Image (cartoon, rainbow, N blue to C red; front, side):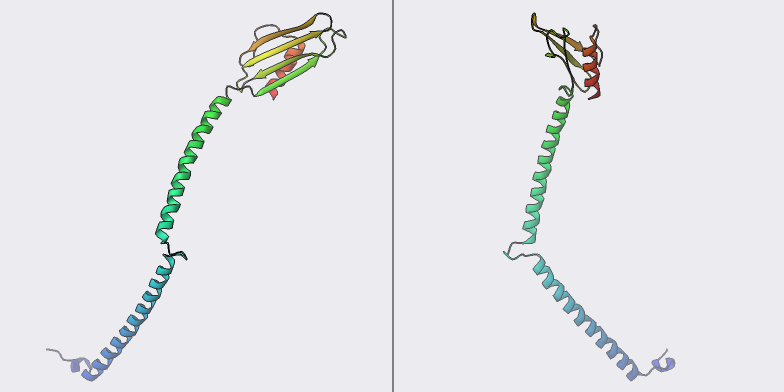
Length: 165
């Protein structure tokens, strides 16, 4: 059997080393307890505000607000999609040309108005004014930017202006 003396160690030396290690461990435990206490105080301070409300309740309120905002955002998004769909059917492009229909008899009171959707569907409204004969109004249908009846120079000009706008 081996003894401590076989390794060159004395019992009193082992006791001193053991006591030193125990003292070091006790100091480390005291330091850790102090740090834990300080951390606990900071946690308590963090978890309550000046009014005494807990931070958890404030977080719950904020999350409820975020849920409400997300719901409203979905509603707005749905409404915007509906508006976008309806906008495709509205008249977005306009072309207008004023002209003298009867060359110095009626003045420049005549006009051609073209209204087109995004897909270039719509109509051409031609209003020809004469001082002696009154006013005549004609309408021509436009499908995909094309008209299947003859157009006057002013109607063609108004159609091209609407397509560019």
